[in-house]
Image (spheres, one colour):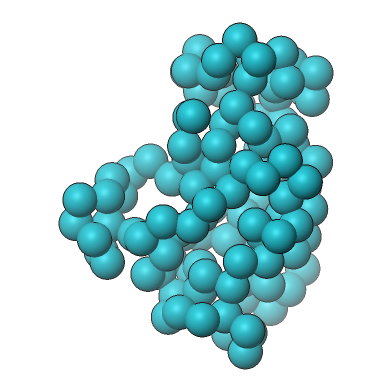
Length: 115
């Protein structure tokens, strides 16, 4: 694991201004995004029944094929927008969006994008 206290020099923003959003229909749970993040913002986990029900039929098939394993944002406040997770994702399932503290119109509760 990396040392989460470090702020890598290639990270462009102060921690917490941007949050990774994971497209649940694209994520295949391969994990390179988790390994690439220098600030331990992401972790692998299993989709719950409620999350699975929100998937498209293609997303449900992908999730089933990969054991419902996907990446999750576990430390959104630590994200410094370096983009390493985005570059590492083979399915282009991750985007960065402004956090709710940076733009009040964003939802602070839901870090994953079901689309």
